[in-house]
Structure formats: structure tokens, C-alpha cells
Image (cartoon, rainbow, N blue to C red; front, side):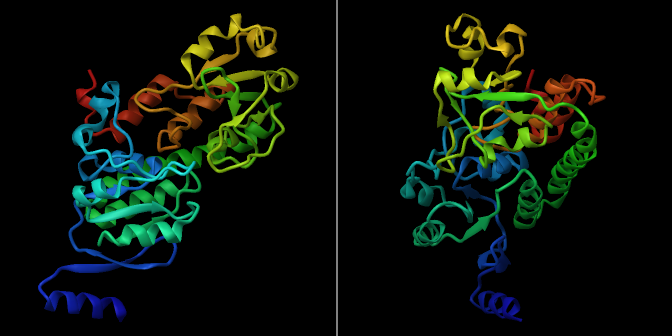
Length: 326
């Protein structure tokens, strides 16, 4: 009843609006027509990009020249920044100038309630969104469909997401029957940053049947825990999954790591990052492809479709400008 009363009053005033309930049970009044959205953190901006680059009102960070063919209209959007952890905050003036119809914010962000209050002072409705798991992509795409009316696009992205999640579930029994591959996830130019138990940056690995060679606890949601070379040597992982090309290329000459079994056995793998990183930084919809890549890397006999074939299909679905990627 309340929803109809609100809409009725607004229509009487000559305004078109509606009330939507966000992922945290908050009833938020939004415009009837939503054409521009600002997402306050990179993972949400990325799912918006997959949905429709044209609806992105402002960016958290600029795109690279290499990413330009994949981001369409979003390439030239103003950079407002966002909430990246470690105390980073967006430029509220740029947000206001970009005139989004709605602001999306990760509901589990530290100090979320206070942040919402600050954002709402701009006179722009704020929706709090779940982004705790890859599974939350389903809800995000469905929400974007409801906001913009483009439910067909949402259905296509949800279908691929559910397909990947179903594939992961179907493979778990087979993965459990294999000896787990022990991995070290090497972040940073020197490879001496990584993720510990509980980090959502490790979610793709948790679905891959492998186990972290490190026994450590995370100290913050941001991740990238500093590691000593001695700690990595003691862990002696079966494989190393590296984020930085220079580290992956030079590890064989690195006196700290050259004697690790992963290096001796040539089991050092660079995470693909075209057009965006498959695993993290930011953790995005690319993880749907990243999980498949990890499973193929660790247990290549389990997947019938090659990584190259899957990437081609993935890009046709998720990047509407695919035909311009020549």
C-alpha cells in the first residue's frame, strides 16, 4: 500500500517515481526512468559495464587505452573515484556533476551507513547492493534490468552466470576426488603480497579444487597481505599463480624463488588480464571466466571446452562492442 501511495503523490506533483527495496531491505524512492547510474566501487562499476556501458554516469578510475574497445560509451566518463578500502573516498562534486539517477553502493563496506548519509545529501537515491560472492552477480544483473527496463540484457547475463555456477557445482565431486593442487597467489611486482583465509579475492580459487599453500589470516578486507620470501619458500607451492607479468617472467632468475618446486616444474601461470583481470583487482564478473581458467590450469582434463573457445563465447555475451575488438 505504501508504495502505491508514494507513487500516487509523486504523480500528482507531476513527477514520475517508484519505490524499490534494495538488497538490505531499505525502501528507496527512485526515478521511474533510470538512464544513468554511478557505482561507488569498482566491482559494481564492472557489472554495470557488462550490463550496459551507456548507463555508467562516472568512473572509479580511468580505463586504459587497451580497454577502450571493450568499454564503449563509458570510456570518456568523468572520474569520480570511489570506495576502494584503505580510506579512499570519491569526489562528491564530480558525482553531483555527473547527475546519476541512482547511486549503487556495496552494503558491507566499512561505515556504510555514514557513507549513505553523505551520498544522500547530494539528493541522489542510494541503493545498497550485495557483492559478497560471485553468486551476487545474479542479483546485480537482475537489479539493473529492473532499474533500466532492459530485462532482456539482464536475462542474457544471468543465464551465463547461472550456467557457470551450475558447472562449478557439477565439478565439485570430481575435484574432491583429486589430490588438491597447492597454489601460491603472487600479487605485487615482487610477488610478495598475497591473500589469506577469508579473503573474497580468493573466491575463484575456492571453486577450483585447489588449496592455498599459505596458512595465514587476513588483517583487512582489502587483502594483499605482505609476505616474506622465507614464508613462501617454506610453503613450497605446487603452482604459482601470478598477477604481474614482470614477476612471472623473472621468477626463474629470482634467488628467493628459483628453487621452488613450482618454478622447477614450470608451473608458474600469469593470470590473464585482457581486457580485465580474470581473478581480482577488481574482483568482477571476469571471475566467471577466471574460475574456468583456474580449473583448466590445475586440472586440464576436466573441462571439455578450451579456454580460447570459452573466452570467445564469453566476450560475445559480456561485451556488446565485441565486433569492434579486431
